[in-house]
Length: 333
Image (cartoon, rainbow, N blue to C red; front, side):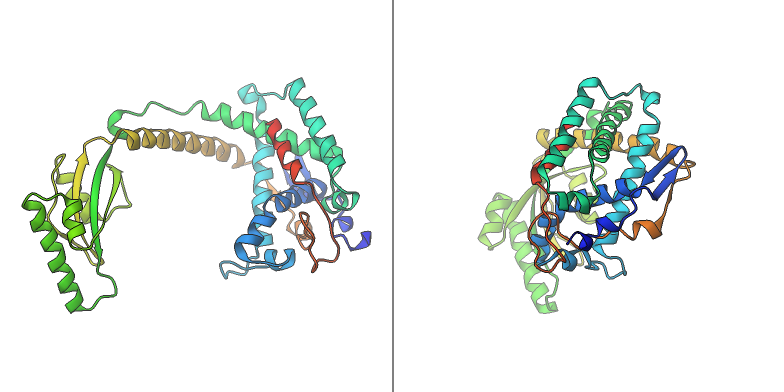
């Protein structure tokens, strides 16, 4: 039965990828790939209605000849590149793994080995040293990311963060005949007239069986239609626009507030988060430009997701079980 396991046929000491002063073994690559498979497989099966692992991972979602398995493996190899790069530059940020963290990682690795069947461990090419190494990499990535992101500029001015609040009435004209569009325009004009005569936009829209929505936007917003954004920009607090006509809809908007406090603070945090992410990626990419990273595609192709690691799979060549509790091992980071 063990001969049916794909993991058993992998040379764990062979090279999956390499970079300056670092080799990633097939044992590590296979374990990381299969660990990720176990974490997401049940969710993907449920979402996509797949009955087996082989059905799920052989799907070509975008019709470009790339299976979900290949996409996942490419993603995992990039994650390993990222983590080994960060490990190589720990001294640059005075980052280290403490004795307590090492002890916690060792306990988690031992628990992982204890929780899973020998068949599943063989399938994943998992031993205590390999599990420890991956958990150590997770820990280093977390600490390095925090250290690098701490360098980002988090000073966001009120003007940069500001979001203006609005109410909007929208009537879609898509897939309507010219006569129907004419009638819809008349409806929009009635709402406009009612607002000018003292009704609220909400009440005027309701009288014509139309609805309103609320929202907020920043000065660099790209989600609103250009004509709608321009109309809002020209309004003062409390003012309502005339009918705005685009190729796909009719709009009437009201500026409710020059500053939506909740939306503004959320936008401020989004700006900060983006600055941190951008700085992190910039530093990482700078290190990776000349590190000589190279994936041995022939070897990585031997990694297979055919057998499920999370539940019984009647269509797989055998059955394996990986404890979902081991996902908590990453908490050591």
